[in-house]
Image 1 (tube, rainbow, N blue to C red):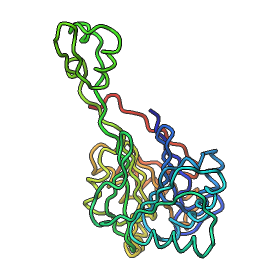
Image 2 (image 1 turned 30 degrees about the vertical axis):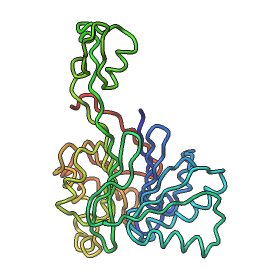
Image 3 (image 1 turned 180 degrees about the vertical axis):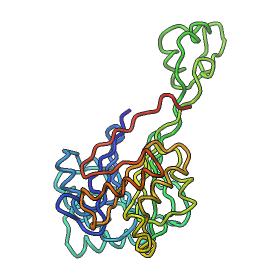
Image 4 (image 1 turned 60 degrees about the horizontal axis):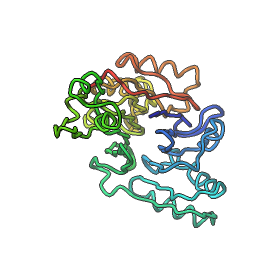
Length: 315
């Protein structure tokens, strides 16, 4: 089952000619999930030829303009592509107000259901969305406005099937092997029951993708981002601008790298939500500081494609 992330925008505060505002699309098999929706989101979706009408849910971290100003256009666009399924929008308080007010003021033509679900307790972690074989978890961040981060976490997978063990147990090839591979016990003609653990290796972890932007560094975040195959984390400023970062409640690139390093088993961490003060060439200063703490750091760029494979060696 394929999973891949697409960075639709990596900028913060204001869009630049080659840097749209923060947004990430996650595709898991054929299902699409959007995290934040800054200006320029539609442009990147079109450039990447991604089918936005298949977006199942949009997850908003907070209601600052640079994270939601692409949303009105997305809602109107979806009405032009014969959308049949409801569109779910999740976020902290005031997301519903923003969506409803924008629809009313712009007199949007919407021919599909929009279901807005606000997170009742954004100051406490919990599950906001459940799908087939995975869930989306929200957790509190700390910004100048109520803000949350999100993790898409797949359920644990069954272990590797060992055919030689099945043969040794007397299980004939065919449907019974499939049942064992799916984690079900099987009954043989002689009445013996063969449990799946007799022919399977240890359970294997699913994948985890975490999206965290617009927050100061918090001890609680270490637990939330652990085991992330991909962590997308803001690193808005250099250490020389720490005073500004702290006053505006943002992380520096060093903070992001340190967070990834402190958390258990983060595989790679992409910086996002750059201050517009940095040109593309100057972003290497942010990367250098993040790598000082976590060697798996990299710079995200608009329209970057990031495959997220299974770790077949884990578990």
